[in-house]
Structure formats: C-alpha cells, structure tokens
Length: 434
Ligand SMILES: *Cc1c(COP(=O)(O)O)cnc(C)c1O
Image (cartoon, rainbow, N blue to C red; front, side, top):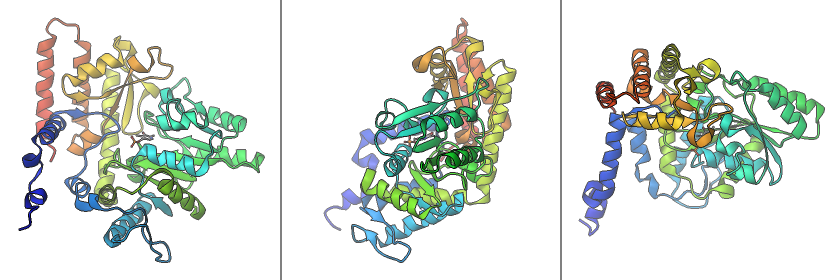
C-alpha cells in the first residue's frame, strides 16, 4: 500500500463534504423537479461514467492519427485516447452522414468561435439571426466576439413568427457576408436548409468572386435531425456546428462537421491551436458514448416522443387560452406568449420555480417588455421525455403550469401551490432518475 492510498481511494464524501453536499442538493433538485428548460437533458449513467473518468488526467493536444496513420499529437501516451477520439469522430460522421468532424470544441460557443476564426476576418460581415428573434448570442449579438469583431447583420421573423427567408435573401445580396449563420435557440418550427442553399446559389451565380460560407448551428435540434424528426443541414450546409448536451443527450460540449477536405483542415487548425488548448478527452469519451446511444433505434423512438410530448403540451396550452409564437411547434420546444394572461416572463418563471417546474423567461418577437422582463416563456420536452413522460403527462404539466400562473393573486394561493407541488411529486416519483 503506497502512501497515497487515501488520495486515490477515498471518495468525494469523505474528502470534501462541502462540495459533496452541494452536489447532493443539486441531485435532489434534479430528481424532484420538472425540467422544462429546452436546452437541457438528462444523460445516461453510461455517459456520466465516461465523463467522470480518469481520462481527465490526460493531455492530448493535436489530433488522432491522420488518414495515412501519421502521429498528430504533441504528447506521447495517447494510444488509447486516440482510439476514443477516433471512435467518437467515426460515430458522429455516421450519425449525421457527413465526411469530416472535429469533436474537440469545449462548448457550442467555442465551436462557433472556431468556425469564425477559420473563415472570417475581423471587420468582415456575418449574417445571423438576432437574439430577440430566437437566435443565439454567438450569431452576432452585440456583447459577444461575433458582434464586436465582425460587422454583424441580423435577420428575424415574419409577423407570423416564422423564419424570414425573404429577409435573409435580401440581406445576403445587400451585405455580401463572408459567413451566413442559420440556426436558433428559441425557434419552435422546422428550418428549411435547402431553401437557404438555394438563396446562396442564386447569390453566388451573381457574385462569382465572393464566397459566402453557409454555416448551420443545430445545437438545439441535433437530436431531432439524427432522430429523423427534422430536415438535416447536410448536404446543403458548408459547415455544421452542434452542442452535444441538448436534444443529442450527451456530455456538455460540441462538434464541428463538414464534407470538404480543405474546410476540415482549416477547422482543425482553428480549434487547436487557434481557439483552444488541450481537448477534454473525458468529455470526448462521453460524447462517443452518447453518439453510440443515438445510433440505436431506441433513440429514434425517444426523439419521436419528445416531439409528441411537445405538441401535446402546445395543444393543451392553446386550449387553456395561451398564445404560442408561430401558433405551435414542430420540434422539442415551444414559446409561450403570456400576454393574454397579463403575466410577465420574469414573474412566470419565478412562480413556476417555486413549485419545482424549471423554465426560462424568453422574449417574444418585438417584445414590448424587453429581455429582462419579457412576455414569454420557453418550454422544452427533451428532459422530461428522457424520464419517460408521455403525452398524458405532458398535458398534465401544461395544466399544472396554468394552475400555478392563473391563481397567483388568489387568497388561497398557498393551498393551490401545495396541491400543484403534490402532483409534481407524484410525477417525479413515477419517473425517477438514476
Ligand atoms: C446552446 C447554443 C449554443 C451554445 O452552446 P454552449 O455550449 O452553451 O456554449 C450555440 N448555438 C446555439 C444555437 C445554441 O442553442
């Protein structure tokens, strides 16, 4: 027995009660709550194990062996890491039916930054969806690198709350961007990636000297794409980024994919050394396990149920007098417009948190209340579906949301809240995690 036995054998509870205690509290919160944040999910025990493994000890700057078997790492001792990362790449290529992938980005924001660093120069023009229309911060919003270092032009939605393809076409012809970013964080409808390709084809026919890279960010809908519930961005997009922890249900992180050999070379250089140092190989192992799960037929069933649950929730909320941006949903999320109920997004997410329903306030198109208060609420069904919720449960959740919100000023609200909490406890007990 070496001197370090307790260092290597003694677990977190024995070594650090404070951190262990906070993790236990967070575990209870996850167990007892209805998770409706559209960007969250619950990973399998297998993904959790890979992510929490000894792989965190290893430095592996560089890439697994190249097409001719050449060693591309800056450190020795990577033979098993190489196997894991190569497997991860092969699985994600199979999953998305594409030719190349880099699985090292630490997060969605890092992946998007790496694409920009690869293809766009400071001062160049990029076109992306505006934050208040449902786009992501990294698509050109003012406080981010994408908004500060590039000339970011933003598109939005039609009055019906649908992606405005005409506006995108107009902006591309007018501003001649180096990069067009398609994708969203709060858009409940299917995006037609082919239609965007056709816009760019028309643009390139007229502007033969100017190349605009077509990037699609499927962070939210990746699971729907591989589950066959949403059109794939391949073969239309030049570059596709996605997070791995949302509907794809893997470890927190991201990947970048493409079909062009020159593009992947640029992307690889841009991820490392351009934007990142050593890859998180424990996270890459977690991604590999999750991709393995997503390749199984059960995943298709799961994603189908995610959409069924979301549609059931949407239908019930409409019956209960709520408005939905775009009138409904095609995917895993919906955007509730609370205006008819005279309640703000900020008040609603707080009231719901008090009964263990976790959501986030969200702006609606042209929101009169702004991003701090908001008139909307974003709800997603990826996490509850992982627990096993079916349509009848999703309908129940919609009813509990309504009961919590519409009675907020009643004198017997404490009693109503207690009733709601009891029903939520029944649901979370029926569908336990871990
Ligand atoms: C969530 C999200 C990201 C960012 O992912 P992080 O891992 O939080 O950095 C990027 N793009 C879109 C569209 C997203 O929804």
